[in-house]
Length: 304
Image (cartoon, rainbow, N blue to C red; front, side, top):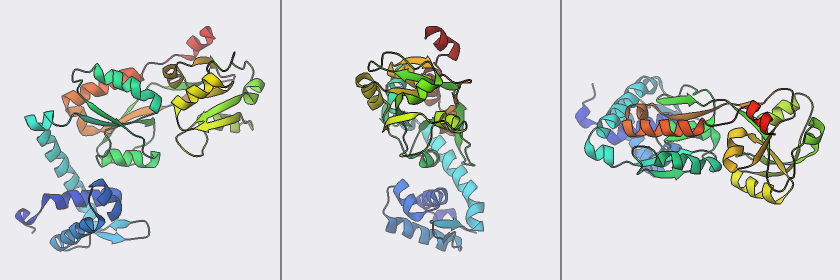
């Protein structure tokens, strides 16, 4: 039996990172170590456990049966230790950092909400990882909060998802356009700005139209909602955006000329342990309240 006095805590952190990332090089990045240092930690783990733990493959590494059996115990022990450290005064006061991933136009809204929280001395860092990496960044502690499409957690342990009220797409326009299109034909012909964090791919609106063999006219594609707003105020281009985003940008809105609304389901993701830390739980509630404000299709129809 392995004597715990022989075990370096850093080896458990290295094991957890490799298991979550399924790659020695990515695990090294997560832990801010060089790849040789991470490889050395893996060699020490293999010697202590008497097992290879991870087998190299084309995409990274595959855990052995022993690694699979050990993983849950290591993650649980590390989570318990982190939670315990937060209970001491130095642990509670020394980490006012929140790393958040969300659309650029939501960043001022979330900052306003956090400044209204009982603890308002947060240090906020906004960034946008690739969608396929965002949940993994949460699970490995590189990200604290994610606002993104509602999607399955895919078995990632330690994550909590809070669905947001359903949003819907609207036709949004700025000072560059005098009025919105009133018919489907004029909507399809109207030059629009496509806002997407991806280089390609279809939005829910495009998928809705595609099922009917229709396509709208895309004049410009940008990854920034704020850039889209500036363009819409200068050029006669419209946008098909979630109502909540259009409201934050201060754009005029009109219902899409479709037979039925196109919904968008978003969620706020966080590490589960934050639900038991009072200051962060209060911050989460402020964020959820800010993100829940939107207009109904009926209100939009009345205003249009």
